[in-house]
Length: 330
Image (cartoon, rainbow, N blue to C red):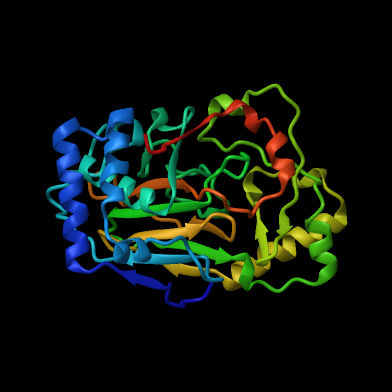
């Protein structure tokens, strides 16, 4: 892993103020960040009124790094309250920030939610949870969260992933690695572009794990006009079912992603935006205290209309019965 600095985009004070004022007005109208169609409609209305300079700041990721850190937003550590003990107890904690995240997401595309995850909310609370320390989910803490594509098992996964930092007293780092930075020989690429293995639903989707349909086999790498993209989640890929040649190529891909990985330790108010087609992300281990001061992120997922980064064959996958909810303008 390298210590290279992640690309940044800076919001000026006028844009920061406009985002906060819009979020407060929407919050005053609806009282929470629940997923009501009326709230989402208001988010679209306010986002449509922002100027072109802010829209330029929030354009989708457009470099081979596949990510950027958005800076300029500020928050009050005391005002947001204690870090929730789990997503299930978070409720509307720091609800104004849910709306800020939705506004930013709407400037880049269409926010999405999942019926089977965090009660269908469009903004997720990512916090360590007792009893989940060793899992490969956002609720873990004591283990390395392996680099992965967000919701890799599903054809309707996000194009962009946003991680907004509420609290990070311990400077816990998010890891990120772009497929555009790796070096693989043509034989490995040929192996990994074969649809040989499925990617199974992760532990955040308990209903999907019981789905009875046959698992779809898919490539790990795709070739596009702009360059390679990937669909990657080794913790939920049955590699033992692959040929020795495929496993060896997959291992070399993992090694290359580790070589080019960067470490991003977010400060409160910063938002990491990653291209989910180019970048795998993870998290270093840490020791959770469960005292209200642990690391706390807000997560939002975005689809970009008209994007062509995925093969047509994905359209025929069942997605293990999981339905994505997409927020559109009214």
